[in-house]
Image 1 (cartoon, rainbow over the protein chains, first blue to last red):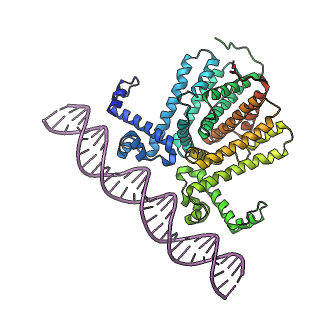
Image 2: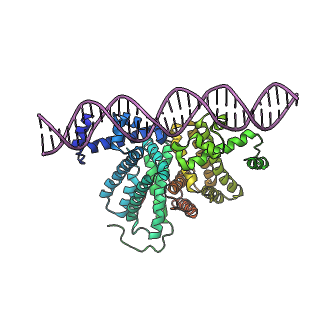
Image 3: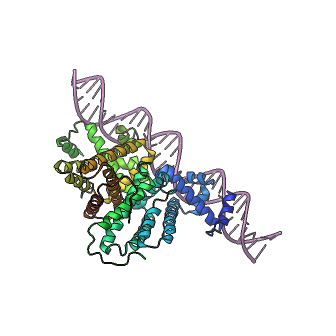
Length: 216
Length: 216
DNA sequence: TCAATGATTGACCAGTGGGACAATAATATG
DNA sequence: CATATTATTGTCCCACTGGTCAATCATTGA
C-alpha cells in the first residue's frame, strides 16, 4: 500500500493530501466489488477488504454506504469521460468529433463486461438515489453537448436532436448487450454499428441541405 | 383477494389450481416491490406484505428468494412478449412484422418507468444468476427470430443480422433512457426512432459487402 | 364423518450488515 | 518536545433478513 502512495505522489494529477489518496483508493475498491457482487452483495466489509483496510476506515472517509457508491459512480464516469475528451482534443472536423465521441465510448480497455456489470448495478439504483440521478443527468448532458457540437452543420437542430437520442440510446443498448451476453458484441462491431447509424440518419431525407462549410 | 380468485377462475388462461394462482400473485407482488425498492431492498417480507400474505407463504411456494425473482422475470418477459405476439398475429407483410415487433416493445401501458426500473434491477443481477442469464438468452433469441422473419427479403442475411443487433440495442437503450430520465422519451418518439433507424439501414447501400464500412 | 393433504401463520434462529464509538497509533504543528 | 489533529483498528450494538419449523386452519375426497 505504501508503494501505492508513492505512485500517487508521482502521479501528475495532484493528489497531495493523503486523505484524497485513500478516498480514491476506496471508491475504486468499491467499484471493483460492485463488478463482481452487484449492489445487493456489495458490503462495506468487502470494499474494505478489497482495499486492504478495515470497515471502519471506509466510514471514516465516507459518511455512509450511499455516499461511497455515489463517488464510485463519479469516478467511473470520469474515466469514461476522459477517454472521450482525449479523443475530442485531436478531432478537427465535426465528423471527427462525432467519431471521437463514438469511439471513446467503446475504448478497448473500458468496453468490458465487468465494468458494464458495475455500471448497470449503479444505473439500477438511480431511481432511488437523487444524487445518482443528478450524476446521470450531468453525464447525459455532456454527452449530448459533445454530440451536438459534432452535428452542427451536418443536420438541422431538430434532426440533430433526434440523432443525439438515437446515438446515446444505441451506445447504452450496446453496453447493455455486452453486459447481458459477454462476447456477443466486439468493440469494432459496436463502433461500426453506431457510425452506420449516424451515416444512415444523415443520408436520408435531409431537408434543404444548406451548404454550411462542413470541412475546415 | 377472494375476488381475485374468482377472476382467475374465469380467466381464459387456465389457472385452475389454487397454487398456480398464489404463485402468480406472489411473483407479481415480487415485481411490484422490485419496482420501488430495487434488488437490494426487495425483501421477502415486503413481497409478502405486497401480496397481503405472510413471509412464510412466499417460501411455501418458492424454494428461496432467487427462485421467486427468477419467476418474476419470466412473468414480466411473458407480458412484454405477449404484446409483441398479439401484434405479430395481425401482421401480413414483412414490413408489418417489423413494425409489430417495434411497436409491441413500446406498448403504451408497458413502456413506463416503474416497469423499467424493475427490469433494470433484474438485468443487473444476470451476471450472478445463471437462471436469469438463461431467461435473457431466450428472450433475446425470440426477439432476434421475430426481427429476422420480418427482415427476410428486405436485406441480405448479413445486413439483417446487423440490423437485428441495432434494433435490439436501440430498444434496450431507449428503455434505459426512460428509466434514467423518466419523461425524456415518449412512446411515439421511441417508436419513430427505431423505425427511422430501420428505414435508414434499409435505404443505404443494400448489398453491403462484409468489409469495413466507410462512414463519411 | 374423518383422515389426509395442502394452505397459512407466527415464532424462532443464526448470520449479517450498517453504523457508532472508544481506544490507539501516526503525523503534523507550534 | 508537547500538543492537536488525523488515521486506523477492533468492538459493540441493533435492526433486519433469509430460511426453518411446528402448530393451526381449510379443503377435499372417500
